[in-house]
Image (cartoon, rainbow, N blue to C red; front, top):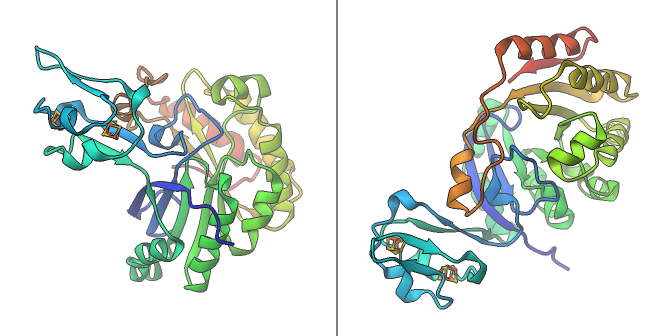
Length: 306
Ligand code: SF4
Ligand code: SF4
């Protein structure tokens, strides 16, 4: 039986940040974490979602006339209001909007069709040592579809990576392990209570899965975002570095990337009808990034600021 097909928010071609070389990153919708600093808010929910870019709207009213759910209202002074609670994501308003102020985010791809999209840039993967990365959201929430796609990509000769927060049953990792060259694995915080407050979930399973995964011989890049007021204290990084250095499978940690916070995703929140918890944050100081990096290097861990 074919795997259930998840919604995909975006196929990002020529990505340089999601594993080695030039890659296509496939963003699967749906996530079981709710990180305060998430820069892909359009991927938080699994279903298709409507984006409204206010700056592109001319208040022409076309969407008002085609929407079967009366989601849109244009006020007398030209203000465009949306009642998103009524939206059934049919896409009619996005289709008819003459100024692309409305976009329905979420496409269903049959595996063969998605593979054809990915293979468009095969020659760039080959010349750069790149490949395909499945990200999200949390792609591991769709293990059957993900395993099928990874298998097909590997059969086509592609290098495969999975970008995960790791908060899933280990059986989901077992489903994709045979077809995955590399896991991009997030470790966001050490303290369990702070992790729960920042992301909505405990980090115990995440840490246990990383231990099991590296013992099983899987290659991983560890990725830790550095977020002012959430995890920018030396003790957090000391604890994470110590944990990584203690893992029996530490030799499978090929790279550790410390990722300074940036606000690129903040603008998306308003267009998705959401509010950002980190809109006021600034990137962490370079001095702190260097201090955190040194904690890893002192333990001979392959860390860098990315
Ligand atoms: S159709 Fe597009 S441009 Fe016209 S009112 Fe709706 S969102 Fe604005
Ligand atoms: S996607 Fe459909 S239901 Fe939602 S606002 Fe547009 S036309 Fe209305």
